[in-house]
Length: 284
Image (cartoon, rainbow, N blue to C red):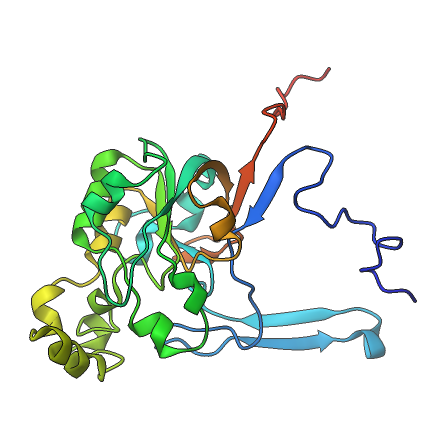
């Protein structure tokens, strides 16, 4: 049998940019599979072949994973009791216009309201907002990506709520700065954090304890999710290709009853000619 990747044999249009619709598709998701990078207290992803082609003539696989893995979305119920689960978030939230903004940040820096205010294209009400800090370049099974990343904190979360955005996310490990999560001295990581070496390092660098500068546990999560703003984490892929642009986003999660979050394929879509039309629903 031939190789399906041979253009003469492949039944799929292999280009995201040259398709009959005239739209450009940019995958903002990290690849996902065996050896998947995991947040510090999650078990490794397991993928098993229940049937293989050589034995059964079919391929069937079983996956064991948390949904907060790779590029994913948090449901409000992930951290706020009494709020919607994944299946209860209305479908329009997973589709719409928005921006990918460039806010470069280094180790442990905080994305501030001033950063968001100055970002271009300007962030508008009802936008889906993705922040490119440049940290996606470090994505992998390493403590640098998870433990030293920049991130949102309380003030950024409150800014997003005040501006009335639809969704928000970044190319970092979580919706909150790592030192405001269990990686720092909070929640399941208290009192020393899941990566306890970070405390002494932070004290040596700043002269302060982590808890002095990051006193609250996941305040950005709580600000966003308690106000119906779901969040994307670990954004990556082609993010640099659409940074600085206004785009259309699509990222539909599973219809998982009582789901706390979901792995998604976050896609940014651009219509260069402005001629694509969503069908009217009429029969003609």
